[in-house]
Amino acid sequence: MVESEPPNPAVGAWLHGVVPEAGPAGHGDGAFGPAALAGIVGMDGGRVRAVSAAGLVAVVSAAPLAEYGEQALRRNLEDLAWLERAARAHHAVVAALARRGPVVPARLATVHTDDERVARSLTARRAELLATLDRLTGRGEWGVKGYLVPGAPAVDPEPVGAGGVGTAYLRRRRAQLTAREQGHRSADAAAEAVHDALCQVAVSGRRHAPQDRRLSGASAPMVLNGAYLVDVSALPRFTELVGSLGGRHPGLRLELTGPWPAYSFVTDRPEPALTVRQPA
Image (cartoon, rainbow, N blue to C red):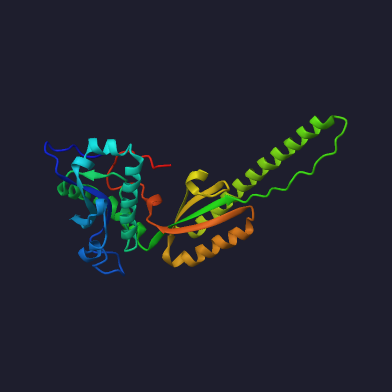
């Protein structure tokens, strides 16, 4: 939740994510240093900056409380155009950080009234955040979506029998509906088998609810919306498995996406935030 505003609100800090202070192994101390952060644009086109405490770094953007304070945020979050711009800007920062090393993404619209409160949060949750960063080091989140392949076998027209044209029509419709239901059940089983196989290679895997066609942009229904935390060393084997699973399950079209920041595998975010509905 956004913290209570002071009597004279000024500029707060929009939290993007938390990263290690010294940078992950293999990246050197400059992975998240001032030079690296200088090229990252945050909210409203401003540059992000670091707030350090307890061996951790919170990457934040300046957030004038006239726009990003609690009451203003509640109004703005009802504006889908504003929300989309904010979500894109926030995600761009998190993605830029993830390309440099492990990051614990903050929820959208996590705003502190000053840097002291950001530092206090890092100190209070130091153990949790360090454990999460350690778990994410050397790993990335990959998405696998499975779409139902259209083209169920057509039902041959039945000859008109004693029941007449109406009875024949009802039989055809029943057969078509039965075939469609069987197709969906088969696709669901295939999606479960694909997910189970991918989890054997990934460190962890999660199934999210399938996206609506308006969100996915695909003409076919989605039956698998999986997220997988994969070691960098295991990525060739993982991508090869996605390809082979597509061949084993011709009723599904599999799509591999990523790498993404590990949103799906961060259960404890750096700070509670306002509940935000993503635009449809």
